[in-house]
Amino acid sequence: VTANNAEIIYGDEAIHNGVVYSGFVGGDSADTLQLNPTITIDYQQYEDVGRYSITPSLEDTENYTFKIVDGTLRVNKKPVTFTWKYDSYVYDSKEKTVAATVKGLVNGDQVSVISSGYEQTMGENPAINVGEYTTKVVSLFGEKAGNYMIENTEETAYFDWAITEGMNYFTKAPVIDSWCYAQTPSEPVAEVAYGDNREIEFFYSTSRNGIYTTEKPTEAGTYYMKAKMAATKNYSEAE
Image (cartoon, rainbow, N blue to C red):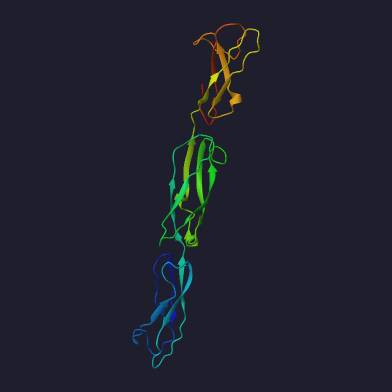
């Protein structure tokens, strides 16, 4: 009497596929002998993935002594999917991440994403600069993580997202101290939210709506000043 093998997914109840008989003679069969074996499986629902014994038991009859051959219940890993937490990101010079949550867990198992990687279409690692990103779930973490699997074709294991251009602005308005004719000209000062303040350009004019140039005034008079930080791929121009 040989127990047939069976397979289930982690979290399923145990099953069996019955038994097969061999060795009958003279037209005897399990039906004619009214055999009804008892089958025991040494697996309880929610036990870990692996192989478990399927054991039939059957009392001998007057003419037959039965040899028992165990079968195997194979408990396979349960595929999971993912949902992603994502906000619309605008460049602010800080690293951005997206978070994945595991879906399809059973029996209250606590499993999380242990790590993720960036595969960038644009920009550089880490995810700071403006660009388009794809984050991939790399592996699972938790006491019961070994009972779950990420299928190679699982589309939710990947997530496309982006960091868009930020709006640059002056955090310290441009100022310059007055100076007297023939003295050393004062240096203008300004600060921007993004970028190197040393790259700020200053422009001067004799009237508010006049033509501005980078040439610092040398003659006595009243002048107007503007400051500008050039745009980059990460942020807009500030003026």
